[in-house]
Every structure is written in C-alpha cells, then in structure tokens.
Amino acid sequence: MKFPLYIAKRYLFTKSKSNAINIITIIAAIGVFAGAFSLFIVLSGFSGLRDFSLSFSNEFDPDLKAIPAQGKVLNVSEEQLAEIQQIPEVINFSKIIEERVILSYKSKTNPAYIKGVDENYRRVNQIDSAIVFGTWLTSSEPQVVIGNGLSRLLDVGTFNYQNLLKIMVPKPGKAAINMTNLQDAFRAKQAIVSGIYSVNEELDDKYVFTHINYARELLDMEETEFSAIEFKLTPEADLAEVAEKINVIFEGNAIIKTRAELNDALNKMLNSENLFVYLIFTLVLTIALFNVVGSIIVMILDKRENIKTLYSLGATPNQIKNIFFLQGMLMTGLGGVIGLSFAIILILLQMNYDLVMITPSLPYPVQMKVENILIVLITIFTLGLIASYIAAGRSKKALA
Image (tube, rainbow, N blue to C red; front, side, top):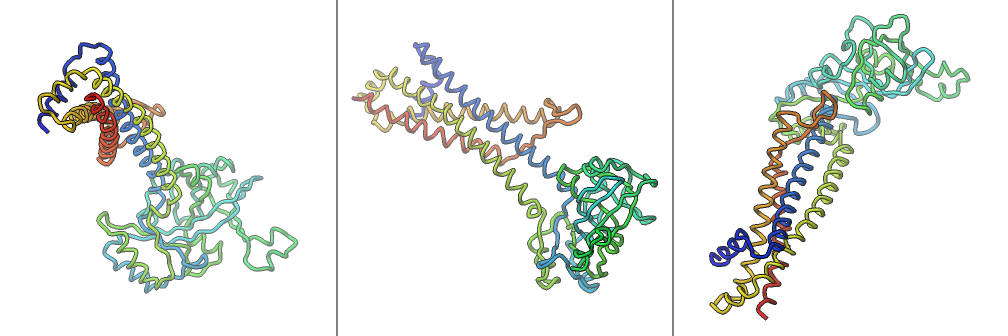
C-alpha cells in the first residue's frame, strides 16, 4: 500500500504539464470543499433552529406530566401526593386544572383554554421569563395571565378594573343544552388581567392562566380532581425510571409523558425538515463529487504511458487501480476536512460574535454539535469512496 500511496500523492500534489488537468483537479477539490462547508453550515443552522424552537416550549412544558388514562379528570388523594413527595428525583410538582372556556371582553369573545395552577407552578416551569407585561398571579383577587395573542384578539390590557375579563364555561348536563336562554347554559366568572405572557404563537393564542382555586370554582370540581400533575426532576434523573415510580403511585390510572412526548408533533416536524435538508445537500455533494470522478479519469488518460511503464516494472493492475483510488480519497479527504474546518471556524464566530442577525437584537441561532461533524465526515468519505472506486476502475482499460 505504501507504493500506491506514494504515487497517488505525487500525482495529486505535483503540477501536471497539462493546464486542463490542473484546472479540473482544482475544480474537483473546490467542489468537495464547498460541499463539506455548506453541509456542516446547514446542519449547524438547523440544530440551532431546533434548540431555539424547543426553548420556547421548555418554558411551558415540564420534565414529566401525568394526565388521566381515561376521561378528563385525574383523582389524586393526599396519600398519593405524599408518596410523590418521597420520590428523591422529584424536585417539585404542580397540580393543574385545565378546560376549554370562552373569553368575553367588552363586545369581543374568543375560545381559549383556562389553566388553573397552584403556587408550585413557577418552581416547575420557567413561566416567569415569559411575562412581557404586568405580573404573575397573586392570591389577593381573582386574576388571570393571558397570552399575547389572546390579548391582541380581545384588546385586553393589564389591571383595567373598569373592564374585567369574563370567563364562561358550559354547564354540564343535558338540561343546560335544552335551555332557551343561552346565558343560563354557561357558568361565568370575572377576573382582572394581571399579566400578559409570550411563549410562541400557538400557546399565546390558547392558554389563560389563573389560580387553581378560581378554576376549580368555575368548573365545579372536587378538591381531589385535577386535569394533570406536572413534575420538575433533578438533572441526573432517569425519566423512564421516575415515570415508572409515578405510574405505580397512580396505580395505572395516569399516563406519564416526557417533555419530548408532549412536543411529539414539533419534534417530528423538525426531524423531518432536518432529514430533507440533509438529503438535498447530500445530493448536491454527490453531484460535486462527479468532478472527482472526472478528475481521476482525465488523470488516468494523461498518465497512460506512466501506467504502462509501472506495469512493465512489475506493478499489478490492482496496485495501479489503488493509485488512483487513493488519489481520489486524498482529494476527497483533504477537501472535506479543509471545508469542514472553515465551516467550524465560521460557526464559532457566529456563536461568539453574532455575524448574522435575524433582527437587530436576535442573532441567527447555530449549534456546534459533534454528531454534525461526524455526519459530514461520514457522508464525505462514503461518497468519496464510491466516486474514487468507480473512477479508479477505468485504470485497467489504460493497460489495454
């Protein structure tokens, strides 16, 4: 292998007498460089966008969430809550009551979901950082924190005591449906808007937060009835193991979901987009590597007399084939590594100096991940190996 490698390096790095061959080799190397460079930039950009998109839901979604296995109500006793507190990995948990309601403000109405939370909610989720106007809930009066989208739809401001937000929920039972007076079919309560939050467009248009006791009174629920229990775990906690412990406490009456499972649709969408972009750029890289095939074939034609001389001196057809195979791999490897190195430098500059901005205050999000580096290297060397093998096979024809 030393002999083919030595000749391959000489052919690659020694300037040919033919300018056309030199130009074709340079174009092939630039193609590999550009392919590796662009592939890593795109993968890093999508990794940054993925983390950026999920960071919004991380403010809203807990590490684990227990929801009813059947129906809409989860019955939880004081003994079960005490058992949950004994789980070492559970830092805190929050009891939730959630239901679809109708919001009415002045002459405007809009459907939404009310989410009644207890005092521990802010210890489980990072909702504080999402408050853009006003303050979080206090127990001094009936208050709600409304999404930024809902506040625009209803034209609601904070702490407007002259105009309170009206929250309506249909009364249960067939009697309510048969009533001729629509107002009698709804149970209604009023509250002051104490704050406005902004997480993302979907959540901002959906949820209204209030104290759990206010939601319980509105929905006429018992003290032991909840819609869900949300959990914050220690950083080193095993999610599957803790979920199993919680499931045992609820005796199989609850479904335990992780944050990833709660955002299953978003994760699938992001993964699909990432896969499609990778496949598109891999196709572009494959086209670029055709230049490597062309470069090696032209080199074989140019070195036909040298090949015959090497064959006469005792080189086997396989050794001659390996010369051009290794030349292609060296060209691919060097172009790929150099392109990847420049891409890594550019990503590091973006992470530290915000070279590209989406808005004046928001830099384009990128992430440096080892798996992206490995993906680029594996893709480059796999495609380079195939291209080099195909091109090197033409060397045997030069011996004819």
